[in-house]
Length: 76
Image (tube, rainbow, N blue to C red; front, side, top):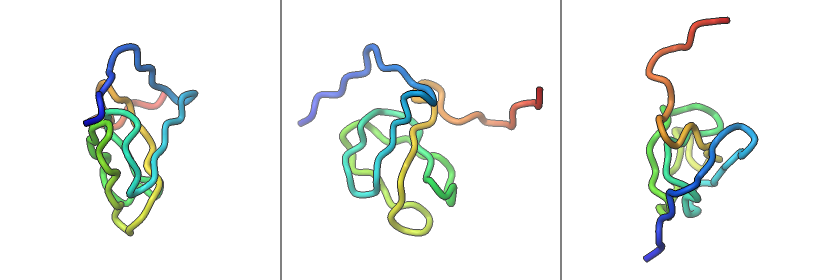
């Protein structure tokens, strides 16, 4: 079984983690599909990435620590 490493993991737009449907997830966290057809889902590192609302898709990592915001952020 694959060992999951959660220490020292950094997140952010500069990291740009992505994974395709059917491939192994590179990091724990909330992932959103490229077409935003479904809400972000939590996927464990090493798991197979699921299909999106319209089938095969590319997934992008949201914040792995906290997930997507539960409410819209105020405009600044």
